[in-house]
Length: 253
Image (cartoon, rainbow, N blue to C red; front, side):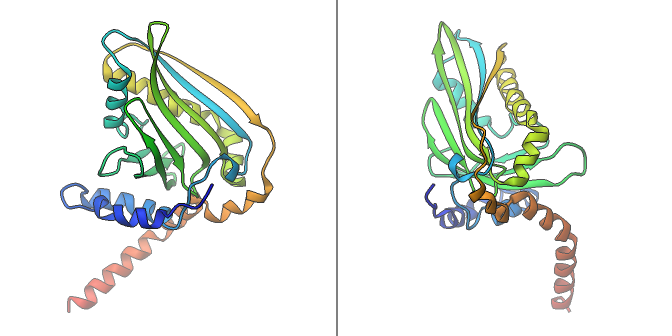
């Protein structure tokens, strides 16, 4: 996909991420490594990735009742970050989930005291019944996810539809070893969505392998791997704190 001037967009949003009263110090500290990885990034579609190409569709079937597609999507947008499974964080832009905004993410690995992946996504489109975001370079996937709601056979269907590849060789290995975690992540998210609306739901998924081949020309995406960059950030964080401490002590004399 064509390069996106994400640096300018992220720079514009920086003031929103760090507004007093909106972003407390803990939140500012949390989003900072995400911003570092998002600056100078670009949109990455499936053809920009390395691994096998997959289509993954996660369904939540609800009894329609008084629910409407517009109401469900509005509810989901408003609570999108809180509906993610515990451990990973979605930092909603100050303007909300709107077309042209950048959302920052911290994705966790299994287990305690494990590194996180600080990255981001670009919201390509958002309207009353659907919204779509595309991964930025360095994200574990190269591709897009579309979240939508519609009526079918008297029920209301809520759907998360992904078309993606692992973005580089390291992520491809990770997906082959623990790819089911992504499926569990989105099914848990849909389960949380149904619970937040107080309605029962039926969950299902559809997984299709669209291309079993690897795109070796994109192996160089490893240079932008957000997991590696995030690990370096976490390992060097104590040293940066110590440096700031000594600088502060020096100028306080």
